Image (cartoon, rainbow, N blue to C red):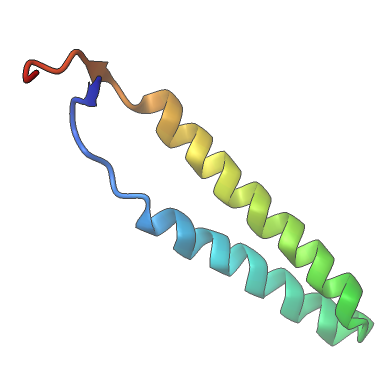
Length: 68
């Protein structure tokens, strides 16, 4: 099985990075608790990368490979 067209997942890492950094900075600014900000940001980043991966997985069309 091979994909019909190749999709880049690099933008998924970028969105995950921003989903990690922005919440962490906001929580650090208002709360000043590093561990709380880190765990909330880590959860947010993992959730965003997981959702993007799920989107790519569900929208990728596969065909049977012709080479053997």
